Image (cartoon, rainbow, N blue to C red; front, side, top):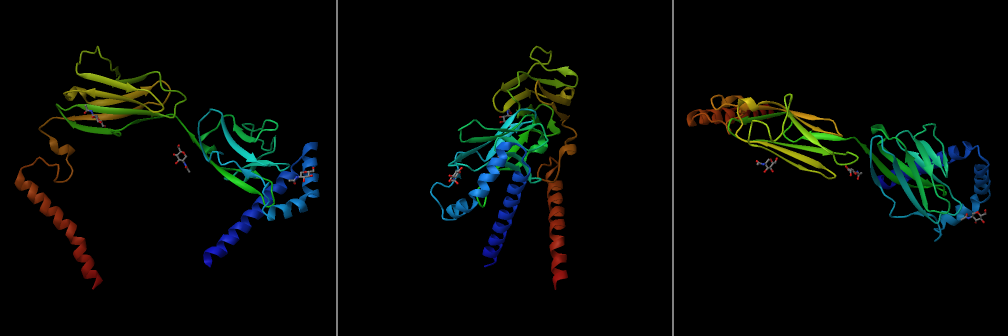
Length: 304
Ligand SMILES: *[C@@H]1O[C@H](CO)[C@@H](O)[C@H](O)[C@H]1NC(C)=O
Ligand SMILES: *[C@@H]1O[C@H](CO)[C@@H](O)[C@H](O)[C@H]1NC(C)=O
Ligand SMILES: *[C@@H]1O[C@H](CO)[C@@H](O)[C@H](O)[C@H]1NC(C)=O
């Protein structure tokens, strides 16, 4: 019952909203074409209204192939596409949900933001919204609407991404002297795969002919590019900041700490990893157990 009532309420609210947008669309017109559209819509309002409420087989609908989720790159033109069947003399509009802003009506662009543009080829079923230089803030929900009574809409989610570089070990890596430094750098959301990914250690560019042997680099390029740096038998002089620098994305860095065998405690957390002698380990675990149990006991006391 509650569900149905709220469903009806939100349906009513949506129709009101759509009606409102349709009104803005009509009142905002300046070109003669739009006046014609308005005349037609008022003359045929009654006919359309009755026709649509009877679920006419030639009522307009969205082609199911209309994409629902579009990913674009910052600064690169992106097109939100709407494919409509049986449009006849209805109008297709694009609305931005964030601020309920009417962006396009038919072939006309209604926003002062010069980056937006309505695109439609005569007699085609495609009504596109083009954003010339999208920014991160343009991400969000948009809706393609058909001016039926009540209007029907198709939501499209736009996701604007930026080139991104990530080193999987995070900002810091702790390892024991003698082990292998294994760093994986991933580059995503670039217009094309990076032509180069350069690793540096401090100020020094890492390459194969360096005096330090035991270095290998494997780079795979694609939609997502990765570069793996392996430095075998790490010593204290291998510690420091490693930077992964793709040519077409921001760099990422990680600080490597090489721990000499004598001070393992610096990287240990908890008893499981401890290399202390067994008695100390047991003691450590017992203390942990006691600490873990304590709140339970006090909770019980509090409860009774
Ligand atoms: C849309 O696609 C992006 C990237 O392909 C994905 O991260 C996101 O979860 C998708 N969103 C929806 C609502 O499907
Ligand atoms: C479209 O408009 C014409 C007249 O301009 C009218 O004859 C026709 O019925 C309208 N179509 C629909 C589906 O309303
Ligand atoms: C390096 O780490 C990755 C996972 O992060 C792993 O798949 C790979 O086998 C490691 N390579 C070496 C040589 O340890």
